[in-house]
Amino acid sequence: MSDTVDSEEVRAWRVAQRLTELRGEERANLIRIVGIAGFYGVQLLNRYGVALGPVQIPAMEGVEGSFHLLMSLLALTGVLVASGVLIALRNRFFPWWIKYATSTVDLVLASIALVVADGPSSPLVVIFFPLLGLSVLRFSQSLVRYTTCATIVAYLFVALAALRDRPTLAVPLYQAILFVLALAIVGVALDHVAREVRRLAGAYADRASRVPAAPSADAEGGT
Amino acid sequence: MSTPTAPDTRPPRLCPHCSAATPPEASTCWLCQSALPPYEQRPRFEQGVAPPRIAGEAGAQARAGRLEPDFVIWSLAALVAAAVMVIVVIDVAVLGGIGYAILTALGCTPVIGALAFMMWMRRPSEAGTSTRGESREQSTLVRIVGGIAMAVGAMLAVMVLIGLLVLALLVLLFIACIAAEGGHL
Ligand SMILES: [Zn+2]
Image (cartoon, rainbow over the protein chains, first blue to last red):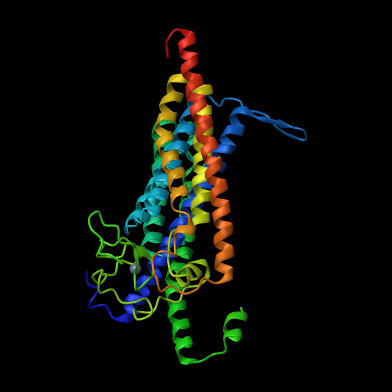
């Protein structure tokens, strides 16, 4: 470990960053599980419909049993992966690469779901945006950059797969370009957030050290 | 205090840098990845490097003396995950048939069991009390929040156990159905 040569400042930052990363991983994992539950719930409504007094959602025509089964198993896989993260965190297994692994698995599962659904024409294609958004919770610039690139690659994969195997579901080129552009813009914005957080912490530490004995009521209360 | 012998029963100790509880045999902190001093010569919490100033619940936990995965968030995630698994098993039973449902249930049960077990074993009440004889008095707020978290955790654990029971009943039902249908899946 390079622990002995680290300056206090470098170590303080690393400790703070790892704490933020842990909290972010927990939060991202919760959002991931709730998200899967939500998307799967919509899929269940699609399949079976609902009739509760004023709320009447008819079952969608043409949702085949095998398709729905596949979606159920994808949701199950996602939840099992998220449970693996829960078990790992509870056992203090928290390597640096876990954030890349979970982002990759998310994207792979979403891509498979889209390829078996209606490809780039599916309304499910919006799922790429929350998956990209989750990356910023770890406040790691490299994770945000990686996820942005991976999301764009996943979308292109889905679009090209539709073009090759099911041309009726393919989207026109301008639509694909717009989507990729939107993903890239969100990625750039998130990258900025991840970078500025460090600058903000530095600015705060700098100001806090210049005010030696600020009255606590003033420091705590005024946000 | 007597010298501990194998297996290592020494209590976990706090990382002097981030105050995460680390196993006694660890040489590196699992959380902040700083090198830890040898167990015997560990610096007292107050003499070590001051824990980083962190806001919110992480800060509250660090000040309470011990940093662990957030119990409420963890339990909530585990509960929703278990619920989704149970629904998928039922759904698979309706659509794919009994054989697939049993396979799915067999895959899910150990995971749900592990989640329920961890939810039950690592309650916040066990954290923060035994690690340091010299620990400061816990503030009333921390005790109230800890108590609420424990009650919620116990409730969630019971709900997961009920989910498990439902799962077991389902499996039994499927087996009964197979037997009634003459054993073809
Ligand atoms: Zn540490």
